[in-house]
Image 1 (cartoon, rainbow, N blue to C red):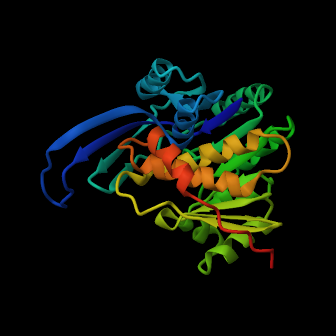
Image 2: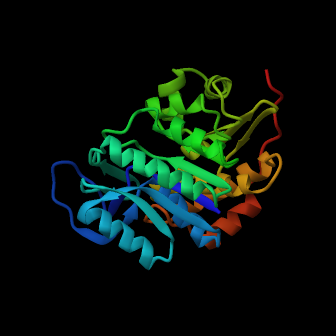
Amino acid sequence: MILTVTLNAALDVTYEVDGLVPNSSHRVTAVHQRAGGKGVNVARVLASLGADVRVTGLAGGRTGAEIAGDLSRAGIPARFGTIEGDSRRTVTVVSGDATVFNEPGPSVTEPEWRRFRALFVELCRDARVVVLSGSVPPGVGQDAYAQLIADARRHDVRVLLDADHEPLRLGLAARPDVAKPNAAELARVAGPGPVEEAARQLLAAGPAAVVVSRGADGLLGVTPGGSWTVRPPRRLSGNPTGAGDAVAAALARALLSPGPVDWPRALADAAAMSAAAVLSPVAGDIDLTAYREFLQEITCRSPRPPR
């Protein structure tokens, strides 16, 4: 089973418009509303592919009830740690590209965090892979992901970390199996410079592998044994907000297999899944037909040896 963790679960609202013009009114052509947050999006992609997946995280209030209810209707098992505060909402405006408004989320108390960690440990007993992704809500320590990685490790569970800022930096030392920043997140932790050099800085901090999402430039995978690059089949127009979550879903599937990861295959699969996610108007969905077509077109460039 793959367990996805969304500490700052949200109710995602997506507006489709013909064009986004600042300081003007817009006619919304379509509205989508459903449970979101990065880990929830990862779970949706995995569920659409038939994977055994479960969602956990922190949720509370009326919005938290809407999040849990939406996942139940979608047939995705979820057990959230309950909090007193009302869960956040996000708003995405899609007009060929995407503009996203993220609320900070409710403050979490120390007892609420302790209860969640106990729930997380319980769920890890049935998990083979854990995906830790997204922001950390107010009140939760910046070392939250480092704590959860240590908890998962005690149960021999593989871990993928997709975070930003201090939660990413502190989580690296806990030695996740994969760290998956995007290019901006990588630069914020490793500093400016060539992407592969920055990725190797992250690799030296503890994870077994680093996979960097670079948007239209594709993916870079770096391990102690070498590095690989893979690009999407063509430049695509759509909603890129769920593309990184689709990459995380693909890498989580790769971690399910015992033994070393087949990186060329895993990265090609992740690139195809990411491209298929861009074609969907809502984060957490992928165009399955396009995904299968992209798999036939995408190839992973031969590895370069470590420097």
